[in-house]
Length: 511
Image 1: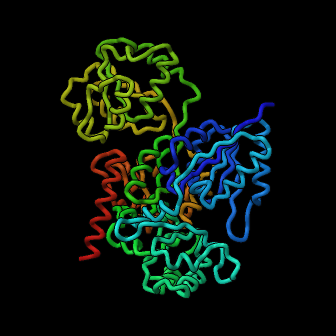
Image 2 (image 1 turned 90 degrees about the horizontal axis):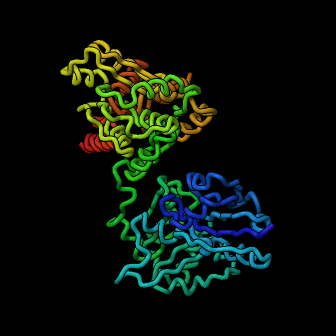
Image 3 (image 1 turned 135 degrees about the vertical axis):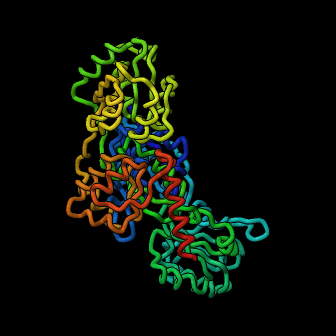
């Protein structure tokens, strides 16, 4: 069997957006991913066909020791596989990537190094601390803090570092920080030198503490700081008060439960992360195809090219599944020739446009009752209307149009179900507290309440945010107090509504 190839890939310090494009590309072709502890789990989703092997280690325990990790990489490479060794930060900055590369060379396994963003720079930058700054610091030294400088056997020249005058960054240095501070002060560094601690740098849970060399340990202990932490020592640490940005975003620190189906949640999750929130994904519904498409296929064949009939889409899912069936039947956009196409909601309209279909009707608001009122100006007597949607969709639009005289054929195009094993995931999600629970449809409300069962009281202390009035009405009917209803009934509108809500709350608390 031909020898494979091993990629030593730096995943960056935490924020998955800091993975390089090459890192993403090699993950996509990986047969095996050997990964560390301090990685965002979403990165593993970039390797959909790979076996994943956890080899993480932390102080006092580890899944595999370094020798075993080296042997694993060699064995998988020699077996002909494409292997990604996914490491936090950069592989060659205190990542032991050099040792792994040496083992691969010795075994004759081809390898490549894909550098990553080191936490020494990125965590400081996310805390608003430039490690160099003209006129303040023209050098930066990165050291490991895992060596205790007070033991007398350290390979780091702490005495020299105390006199460099530049920026000192210590990785993995929280446990040994008291000794580092003592040694630096004993060797001439001023006790009032600015210093900062950054925990979980670049993650949504990032915390940063600033002070001086003399008090930074006590400040960290008082704040409950713990590993993983980087320590920044030098005048640049004082710049955080001026240019800190990451934790100044409008939803900073808010844990937001996202109940939308996994296939639809990515845009909302991205918006929340950009605004500083910590999205917690718990898809209370799962969009699935039907077991039998004979009814939809029959109606699509019967209405193909028939002039004057309406096709009204109420969701992105309806567009996607109808298009899949058209393709399966050998049809394309010409199916809509002569038809009047309605789109309920801006996202649905965008989905149609992706297939080259410009909707003829887009209501001012995406509420079924208001859509019917807006359409009531048309003479619907005898009009044929095809209404594809969820197998468990509301009947408000269909019954409203039927009441106006239309011949409505409401047909399932997909179904919603509860994801397997979701109850345990729900308990885990709420274990660390939740600030906001977001709902994007009535079915997400019903399903989450069924999932929680007797634990629905967990929602009592949460802000309840709904994408629109129909979803809000369902939540209230089921006993929830709704705090936020988006004026624009899409995920962008829901994110904006969350920002407005917490801005108003902050103003009230100040007042």
